[in-house]
Image (cartoon, rainbow, N blue to C red; front, side, top):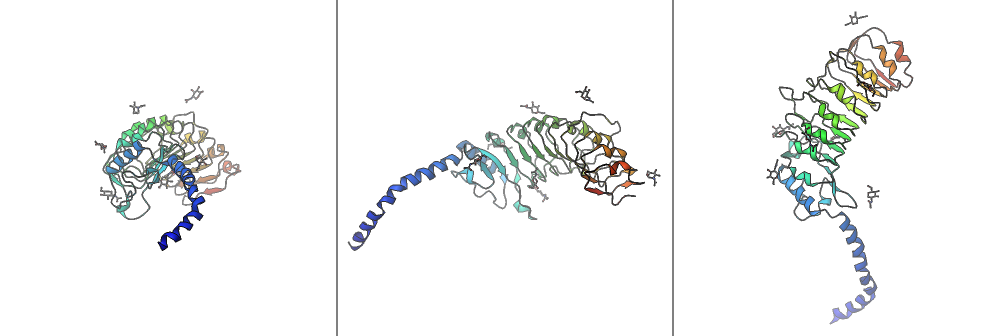
Length: 323
Ligand SMILES: *[C@@H]1O[C@H](CO)[C@@H](O)[C@H](O)[C@H]1NC(C)=O
Ligand SMILES: *[C@@H]1O[C@H](CO)[C@@H](O)[C@H](O)[C@H]1NC(C)=O
Ligand SMILES: *[C@@H]1O[C@H](CO)[C@@H](O)[C@H](O)[C@H]1NC(C)=O
Ligand SMILES: *[C@@H]1O[C@H](CO)[C@@H](O)[C@H](O)[C@H]1NC(C)=O
Ligand SMILES: *[C@@H]1O[C@H](CO)[C@@H](O)[C@H](O)[C@H]1NC(C)=O
Ligand SMILES: *[C@@H]1O[C@H](CO)[C@@H](O)[C@H](O)[C@H]1NC(C)=O
Ligand SMILES: *[C@@H]1O[C@H](CO)[C@@H](O)[C@H](O)[C@H]1NC(C)=O
């Protein structure tokens, strides 16, 4: 009795606020329905998770019935609710446990709006890069850096015509025999702006110049530690005007590849750690926009050519550890 008489006036005085609750709920619930994940995509993600090995349980938020847009590593489009990014890079940690392993299920193909897939720093040493990744046609970013895949890079990746960033830096475990014999597939990547194939053995990929120097949108090209050697038959290419950064450090060139002097837009050239010998070529005078030139750790000798003094944008020049 006593409690009821106390509560009744309380209820009456809060009555106007109680009326507001449906309005508040409508606003919040409606906003939520915008990001609630799409059922078929949730199922696809769960299937993908089922085939992964996740020793440290990084994907513990990925559970049946949940809002997959709130799961760790999952990013949904804010109005359509479609999954558009998967950020599953392993944390930089010395513990092998924090890395995802196992298989990559083709259920990912259900994510029809996926624009970014990041599996970097995990340990997929038991499988090759799946061919079906080439069917994720909406991808603009693919990061498999240091993910330790086996064997070859499937040519199917060349079907990703919207891809802008491809990072395969150290993505393939080095093996006894070199598997990459051609980069022809890369020519299909007509939107590519950034390509990193460093640490991938390209000793047999003799077409690397013809393919990469022609990519129409390429800005950054990183081919360091690829085992590249002098091209015995220098072929003239109609080079892209777009390339700004070229990293060919830590390869086996004994002379500067002439083809790079057709890349007139270059701002940054890295050739350290090769076997360049003789004088510094005069041709660097043609790269008028050059700001960074790293020729350290080679066997260059004689004097600095006058053409280098005409590069009036040059800010960084390293000739250390030469002769
Ligand atoms: C949704 O995304 C668009 C473009 O990505 C952005 O301009 C907009 O501000 C976002 N809206 C909200 C509510 O986050
Ligand atoms: C993908 O998942 C399906 C169904 O769960 C299974 O049959 C298939 O073997 C899986 N493939 C891989 C490569 O894990
Ligand atoms: C990756 O996993 C394999 C076993 O699947 C293991 O032998 C290897 O040492 C791991 N790699 C690294 C760098 O930890
Ligand atoms: C790929 O991932 C690595 C590590 O997570 C990161 O350092 C790198 O910048 C990424 N590459 C691109 C092109 O975003
Ligand atoms: C994808 O690439 C592979 C190998 O380059 C090719 O055989 C296949 O026809 C391509 N598929 C599509 C849908 O373009
Ligand atoms: C470069 O392009 C021009 C005009 O488009 C063409 O005539 C020439 O054959 C091309 N050269 C090479 C080496 O592809
Ligand atoms: C520079 O190196 C080249 C090739 O190693 C050699 O033939 C030449 O004599 C050297 N020149 C000087 C000035 O040391």
